[in-house]
Length: 266
Ligand code: NAP
Image 1 (spheres, protein in one colour):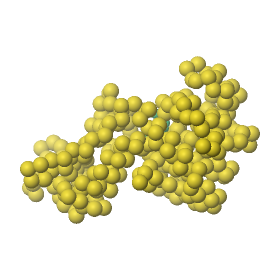
Image 2 (cartoon, helix red, strand yellow; image 1 turned 180 degrees about the horizontal axis):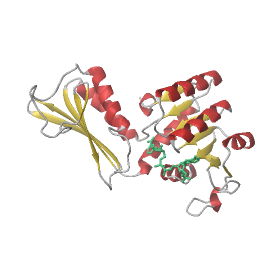
Image 3 (cartoon, protein in one colour; image 1 turned 90 degrees about the vertical axis):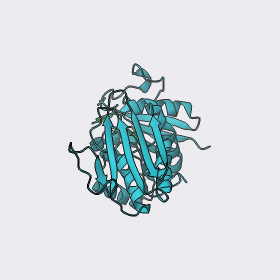
Image 4 (cartoon, protein in one colour; image 1 turned 180 degrees about the vertical axis):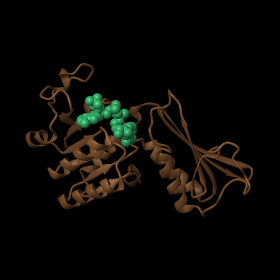
């Protein structure tokens, strides 16, 4: 397999550290450099707690792209900086795999245009857990036969948005194949506001936030005399790395922007 040289942005972050392990463990991946807002001029191997990879660290991403030969930027940072990094990568003709979440429609549109102008690939995936993508696909499949469905998504208590992007995406995928239906008793009333959760096209979405959780979701379907539950659990951030690997391999062979891992999993 052809070697893929990676620039990793956010190497000290929780996702970034998992990505370093992935790069170290994958024969055809090589860390060309890292982008970090501190430790400019040092090597990854100089940083306590990080693997002994002799890859230079840059704070200025443009300097990094000018001095280092690489194939793909992997960005695992924050929305604002991730958007800037991805834009710069495409400007320099470098492919990008972005796990950073929180990009707006306008951001995606701008990056899509930049990728198309350069004719290079860019994959942005808000959920890299392959099991979570399959959960969404299986749920869409089941919704053709079960029109009564509720979604419960459960996350750690530091999560800022609710419902989760995956919960909302699941509801959207189900709504594409299910006839619009208001569920529950037509005259039901909430004794406490919000008791029935959020409502997307008649599908109820419930968000649980507890310390100790990472990212989990249950999609519950009910029919006459039967129920079907589809559940996915991410127990740690390593669960996202098979998706990152798939995206890095795939981005080398595409010439446009792809949003969502579901679009590269058959
Ligand atoms: P994290 O532990 O907070 O790591 C974020 C990293 O970004 C840190 O290394 C941080 O460095 C760096 N950073 C922040 N601001 C920066 C700046 N201005 N310049 C350069 N680096 C900067 O977060 P995480 O849990 O690893 O998550 C990272 C991203 O991935 C988030 O957007 C999260 O929502 C997303 N995520 C995606 C998936 C998926 O499947 N796609 C799964 C989990 C998480 P400092 O320490 O200096 O702040």
